[in-house]
Image (cartoon, rainbow, N blue to C red):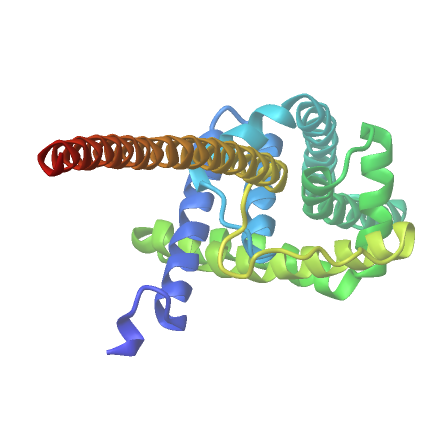
Length: 295
């Protein structure tokens, strides 16, 4: 049936889900040392955005390549975020344990605003590092601006990132499956969101991209056209050389054939001349004999 063909929509959708699930698993494994979670998230979004743009990279190989290439910048951002969240955790602990009122309410509201602000930054900064080259300070600033501009959609992304862990508290036996399912769906929709927004941002900054004509059946590597042109040129030169050699050989064969055909003609002419001379001599001798007989 057509539904179960490898290139059908159903099979392509299943393949995409499997790829995104494997990306989430790789991200969790590489986030175990804590200070590497930024590089893992960046690599995850780097690959997922490539998939969303229609590219077909090797999932594991591309993930670890992106993990390695962006590690330094991600490490700086991760350390800053860890210190900030540690500071917020201490403040929340002190506020919850204190029984004071009045100014504590104001501090609680301010702390809540800053906590949400850094959640927004955390959600946006690593996909931006995966797509753009920028310094650490610029990454934090641009992530905050981007998150504020797209606040409703970013808030939904933050909610989808937190909700699996909240649900797992009650259904801890199925915690890994709940997390994997929600994280995979969230990665799919977040990748579409970031690709769409980043493309618009690039068009506003650098102008629309020029369309690139590609082979619809198969996209070949760089330099293929030059190699093909050089190969065709070499083949043409070889064909011309072979044609010239064949023509020269044909001319030589024709000359040899003409010479060979001329030699028997010369022999025939010589033989005919000899026969004529002999016949003339015989006729002369016969005339002489006849004259003698008459005398």
